[in-house]
Length: 156
Image 1 (spheres, one colour):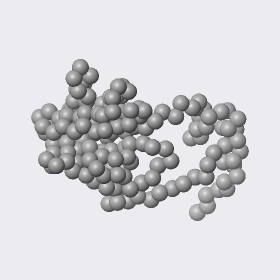
Image 2 (cartoon, rainbow, N blue to C red):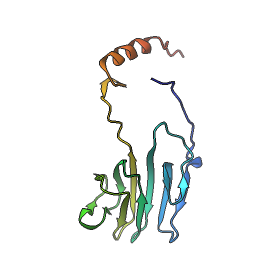
Image 3 (cartoon, rainbow, N blue to C red):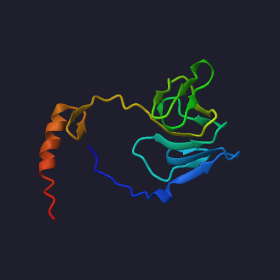
Image 4 (tube, one colour):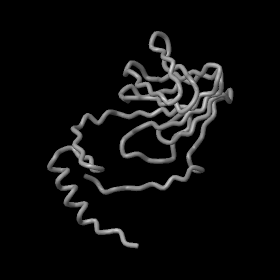
């Protein structure tokens, strides 16, 4: 129940970091990776990073222990996690990491890997939705519907 806020962030303003060996490149949309902190401000702490790994690359990305983290593979096949927890994931697949550490390991095989890494602290709040509206209670949804009617109309 706070005032809406908007940040314009053109693609050219998204910070990019590269590993020392040059095999890993990351667009830091939110959070921090390879020593680069994102330019955008988020209401709650999150990470949103687009990693590009060349074949044979590995990155160990620190994540706060209280974050819930998942990775979505855009292209390529990679290995997510390490040791017994390591899983191979193909393109257009997702893996949710368990809350058992303070980092996430991404490794490529013989081909490059493009992967989104996202995470944040679970809000642990009730969720009620109605169409595009999302609130915590049915009373808040009813009020949001009333408020939406007060926003006026779009004219040409």
